[in-house]
Image 1 (cartoon, helix red, strand yellow):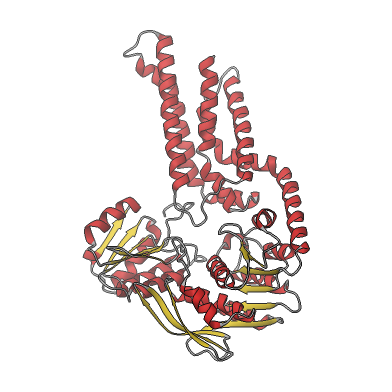
Image 2 (cartoon, rainbow, N blue to C red):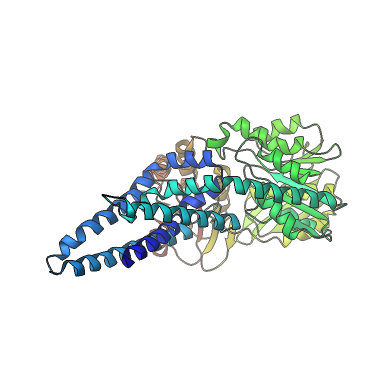
Length: 536
């Protein structure tokens, strides 16, 4: 009886810990249960191969290990006790490995153990413990507690549904408190930033530029939801802050409108429009209209700043009835802020920043890529509209630090360009263009780019054709559905097969890289291996 109680407790704890992958998925879906159910349906193969398979292996091992041990041990109580402890130890070790694997897996949005996650884990544990105890007490046939692991993706769903009403009431309280605090702070300048790509980079660049003149508070990297912004306002906004910058994320129509109602920004920036979260939005038009909710929510004396080089951005710019401006590259007479004479090196980027008011300044930055320059221009345009001098802006640009894993330049024996959190095709092509200007042999390590609105095969084929011209050696990692398209593009472009390597994972790729690289080479790590995507 004592062992049964221990077994139930340990199995329950191990299964809850090993469910971090599913809790992270729920977090990525902003705790919206319909979206999480869609994710479960999309990832049913992983559930079958991982949860169901390992659960049944444990169940069968628990049932038949005593039979195997009967060849060596005659006493039935000893056999049963030994097999029970062995299976429990093996299962616990397996769950510990799965927990570590999923918790440390690279992610576009890392798993954050928030107070909400802790509450969810508490409910998940209690619910799982009750289910395991019930299975063990079933008569006349009890169900092995190890079967619980097969149910964990759905136990997470059930726990989230149980705690949902409480979370909704709690969120409403936090939201009202933050809204009241923002309204009470007289003279606070509020800024909203949204877009499919680049909004985090623009936010931090703008924060650093405006800090030359203002006391600025910006939301952290992953705080772009109503609750994330509310938490920052409630916990961090002080009377001395003069500017508050809120990054605004969205996965459904109406999400930005809710955030605008909270922040009430005077200034808004739309960085780009792209096929992100197509499963939940349904169309690129819905994505564009949702981002435009930021502009629609600006006050009459507000200002909207728009990106460049995007057809949907141009349409939104034309629709905007507020005071507005946009950025450009090279000779663009309609742009307020333009970059000219752009060059790249192993020290970063350099360009002339030209404002429509006649001022020009030379800028140098450790940030790489034209899209990073566009991000700088977006922030600089708003800073200029807010009264900063061009020299102030250039000085701030010089001190900008690269954002981790987004065209991050890392000097050393090998010059490394770390772009592993990028999933934007345009940025991937730009990264290759930057690589082509770097010294030494040029090596690309990539799994290809995903989430391109159903055009993943065509995009990765095109990526392969460009890669053939920009790289001397290529290491393709996992994700066979994408790497096959890259290989086709490279081969049709005449790339040497001897300089093309494939790896199962990043550990394998690192070993290959050590063999093929020499000091002075430049290595581009492009894109990430998706944490929720099975190979095709």
